[in-house]
Length: 623
Image 1 (cartoon, helix red, strand yellow):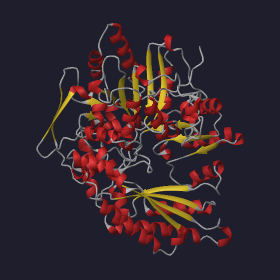
Image 2 (cartoon, helix red, strand yellow):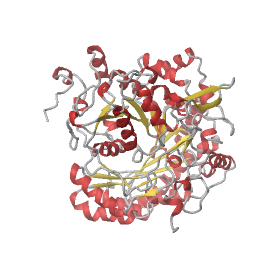
Image 3 (cartoon, helix red, strand yellow):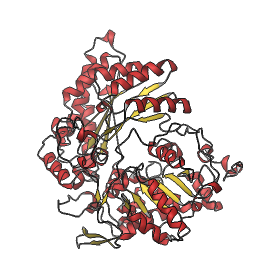
């Protein structure tokens, strides 16, 4: 195999920030001879390299695709604005890292959709890759642009830019899709022929084969297929055998510091908790565990093949993994002497958790994280958080007695039914936590306690019980943020409490994009044409451009954000079946308004509909 020639010359690489983002050649990068493969697939993460290299989904799919001799899977990330400018000025097409070849030469561009604020970056990558931005403008020689990931559960605001959306988990149908592509090409079929065939495959949504009409008030009147191959309802794909499927033994190792520069071991998929604001907890149901021996084997192979000194046990709620103790103590026994750090995010703080954390973390450097999400017990019951103040404070006390003095607390403002008193309770909870610390004798304390209170703004997401809820105005958010800020300053322990908050403008726009419809495609395209990229980055986000475009196109922001939806309204994503039923979600919304709690899946089945997949927690203990 001949040596790959870099797409960027030395003079460019020497004049841009972090040139290692663009040269490929990472540890465990896969090299294939292009002429020996039939299908070229480029995985794309529409954000900067350091963020994209931390994404587990791309690592899994990269390994899965490249296991086939007839497929060569490569990668591309959004070029930072400095290189973006050079590529445009010199008319250099954006390229994949492995072969350094332009994106327009590929058969597929697979874009992972993790965050709504990256939508303009999708257009940046297509544009720089010399691929027409609109699906309708692509000819037979253009790549098939396919999207997947959590944001694909409402694909409508970006429907015009994609040929296909893959609904669900990638392990199940991608091979079939590639086989269909190869068969269509061998038969001399056109792009249109392939898309028709793709539309008939499980989990595949081809937007061009669906028509949308609207009522006078702007809501959807009808959403219907326009060809017989396209189903009226598309059911998400679910991998039910997580211990008998694809997972990399040798994940890619970034050349520069990534956001999460470590081995990631996904111990389970899904969640039993049923928090009413949480999209992931609904769309990834039912919860499915990976077997203990599978995880031990993967941990060893990944650590050996990467040289990483940290492993993260990834899960929406790690404490709910039934073999957690056995796995964690195995990793400690096996790797503590090798100086491998074990990270346990989303762990409920109890004596077991603290015992483990003391063994695997530097108490003086690390912090304990709690996510109460709401300050008052009433609000925690509204969102079905399943946490009491006693749970939170007792966990904090255990941590303080074990030597920790740094705490992070995460909350949301603007939740349905939230009142000023609920917000003030956040300050009260932080203050009580500080008081618990200072009750420890001074000689036994580890200096001053540092409590960081962080608030984000509630954004209703599709396929959650709050998908019908209205957001609050920016004035409302800012008022509640100011109330909380003042309340914290008025506490006895205010010197021990730091308060940080999320940007209200970004949150408002995320709310528009999260529940938007196809009418937003024109707006996103126009915002991009006016020069906007990297909206997820505070230093590059320009709220005024978005406002100007919305005004020019007569798009009413309040229609998407403030308006409460009715149960019988056709929502832009209603054609997708995630297993969890609309009836169940609305019942949960009503229970939220009435401050009623729903037990977790292991305590009592609530009949959400996910049992239709035939496995996971729904069938635990049953023959």
